[in-house]
Length: 103
Image (tube, rainbow, N blue to C red; front, side):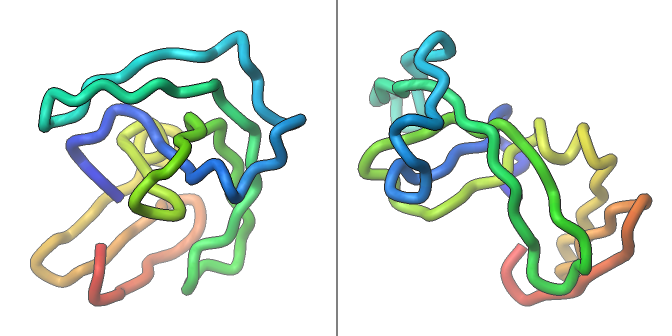
């Protein structure tokens, strides 16, 4: 989860082109001030290792993204996430807690 990202992002290769809502296309500027053209959002369902539930979200689809999936603060707000960086612990009150080495 990236506490500096206001929105969640997913690599375009993980989304069928027909599932992209092109009405939500935008350009975003990252921390390096480079602009990215985002073709839109896609509704996705996914699992997080350590949690037994499926999660749903509408991340922005990013071509040639460095990561498969980046959870932004929109995910944190939706699921009321709490991150303890010192213990690498992600807590989602409606579900459970999970400790991992790479939050």
